[in-house]
Length: 310
Image (tube, rainbow, N blue to C red; front, side, top):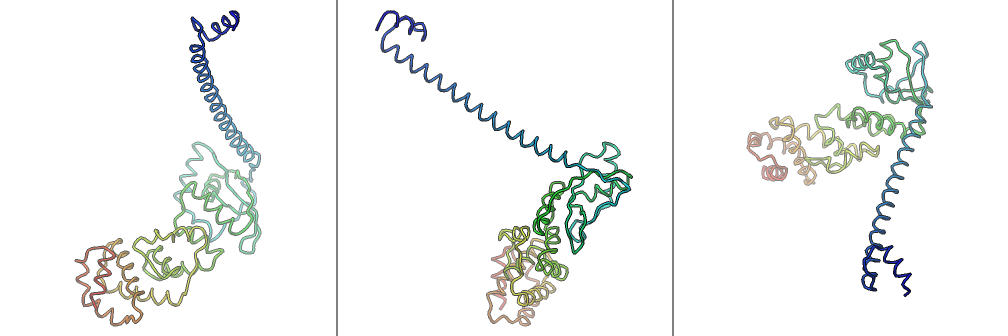
């Protein structure tokens, strides 16, 4: 190696003296530092690029929403309402929104869609019916954006999504919404108004003829929400529900959790007896009902108690 090349290497890698060994070590250290810096820079670039892309997407969405913003004059024809699908109007909530508008102005639009509902074509409020009434009360114009609804199923899903952003839907809200499309939800609601049972236990019985103390663990809640709930063998279910009603008249009324556990244990017992004699069971239960107050509130213990009664 020439003296000139050695001087260049010594100066480039900042080593006081030159040997093959020292040069090799210095080269490795230099390369390692360079690689780490390059990787860090690359990672930073990727992260920055992803963040920038996300910002662009959000910006684009916001621009689309702003471009779609329209205003219905206060003396205009107004909008239609999804009767039996939207939640009921709560006057106190309208008052709170009206006061908020007086103080801060309108900070969000009403969401509407044009489609046919129950045989009538119109522009229906999908989200913002309380806001609509608050604006109506304050004698103001109605800012709104219009979205597209492609099917009945799409309508329910969009309403659930938009309404949950302000106040989560209850299970009964989902049932009411799906009643518009799926007849079995109407059956569920009808039986809920008839029988003194919690909605999840009732739905579990109608859907599978079984029930647990914690029926939600069986995903019945998810079934209700996604629109796939159906009633299986309704006559058999009604017979079971009538039997449950009879036994609940006999046992001492306990707290909510205890009643739920008792119903679950009773349904298990009922389904396990092919030769179940309801009249006989009620007579024996009436005799032993005072002891139920001393039974540990546990499904297995209650099931054992019901078996030993006979």
